[in-house]
Length: 71
Image (spheres, rainbow, N blue to C red):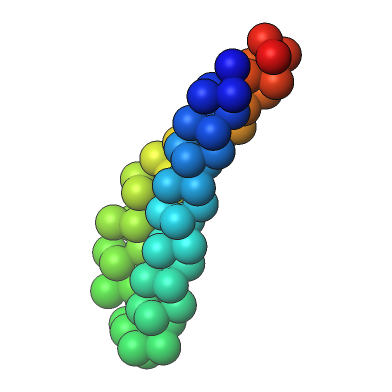
């Protein structure tokens, strides 16, 4: 079950990288001093990626827990 632990850790890492990417993109949009409507449009495109990354990291942590229980 060690494979499940490492696979889950990898999936979690991918999710965390996605979250970090969303943070960097949102900070870059804030630095550009966009208008309110442009800022909303830019952030609206980041929301699905952010939620998918959060889901991916949560699923990865679930896989790690399952691997620990089965070990």
